Image 1 (tube, rainbow, N blue to C red):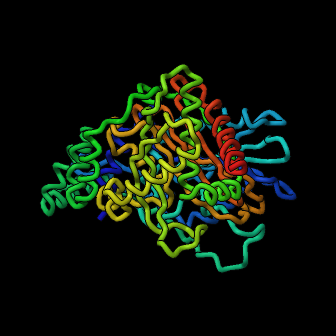
Image 2 (spheres, rainbow, N blue to C red; image 1 turned 90 degrees about the vertical axis):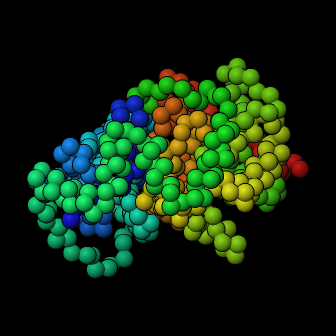
Image 3 (cartoon, rainbow, N blue to C red; image 1 turned 180 degrees about the vertical axis):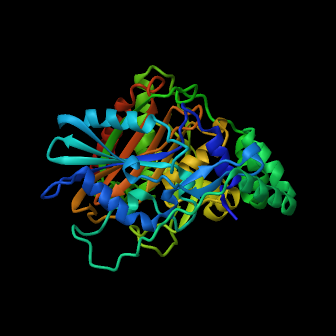
Length: 469
């Protein structure tokens, strides 16, 4: 039997278009190692690690007549050099030029006739640095233990410790022909008649009906979303029709300074980060001449990592929740913003407004290895009326990592935009710094670089406020 996509994964592929590609992207900035790191080195590194991610050598094939969900098959023409590509900036490449390149690369949809990932080595950055841009469709990482291609190229030492590499004896299995695909679909239809209706709904783009059937086993999801549906998201310039082009901006914050703010004001580091985004959004709205009063808010879909009560602050999270949170952009006092967000986060989690990891698996058959992919999937599976933007925060390792001997200096996520969403913000902490990646529609949020600057200014203001207080 072939390995099929879930109905929700298939829906994402069918509904994906040139304006809303669903892949999760990101880019690493690396310090060039002694001897350099060229395209051939990266190809060799990726090739040696593909045995750890077998799905990355598979592609999606549709069943004739949409009699069943698409299936995964080995790509008999798999060519790693198609997926690992090379680009360059005019030396010495600036950050602005890199961000423009990242925006153009990540705006292009993946080719659905090939394995759904790409990687680009970008040469020419100033300061003897290089960048690696990754694009991965969330359908590829289809389980709690799945690994993204961007993870497997990183090591915790410049020269990885000697360990036996798993043998790479991959040979593409012969793909089933159209007749075989139809025959298996007919057999499944006999065994599971309801699957036919799900497939038809999926193929015709009826995502709401498809998700509705999947929610049947996750009552907590249904009830939480039903309560929120009666409160549509506030009107915001972040929402409306979006085009095919993107702008990418970045910001940075010192993790120790954020922890100091947390100790002074209470709550969690995540509360402080959300308050930082809230304050920056407030100033951004004011800079655009938008009305901001005390009751003004922006609703964010916030996938968060939840730790057990006895876990260390820096420990890796073990539970995932996705909250619909109203950010109090009308509140002028930064201290009060932190307190209000902390209260709202605790209330949402305790009051049933959160969607747990187990329920998300029941909803979509998918639990991604990163919250960025989770946020992208959750945003696409919900009505755009429910939230204004997505904000994901992924705690990362606080030790240096290396790719083929090149030390990773910075890492920025690029979360995809859902339909009607003009902005998505991803955050990742790594080696003592929090990195913000802002992905925006090029026309409706053309001043996303202003928002990125305001985020760094908001961090500075919070730090100064707590020192004075």
